[in-house]
Image (cartoon, rainbow, N blue to C red):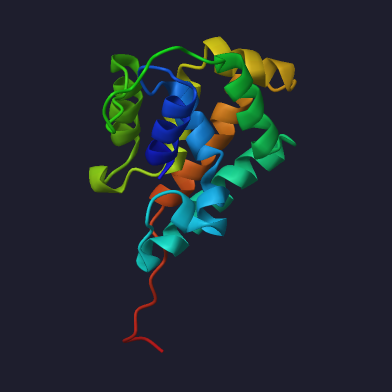
Length: 169
């Protein structure tokens, strides 16, 4: 979903490729798709809870640092500015650099078919530079601190839940 939102962002800003900044904007825009899923891409009902959980996790990470996701995405969007690329097809590709963040997100998960926004967010923060770094600094946030917090959430997901043995009651 974040990728799809990033594609719309990229097209509207007339940039040629989806970059990490647009992915971050997509990650911080998940609540829009929950409020009005028909505005973006059709969300199948079974994915709504998963999307809510991903949104809540990102919000918890940001709120720990008193970051408002709307404010974050607006600042990043403003730093990206307007481009002048005219898209002639509906498909918008990721840049080579952006693809590397998806590869890293894949490495951060145990199941590559289940890359979540927290994985992408962490991958972006691991190599935080440019517009995202500048935005976090303007918000008085040390990028390494928010990276540590994101990695804590990933560790929590990797800890297997304790299962009750039904034979012993």
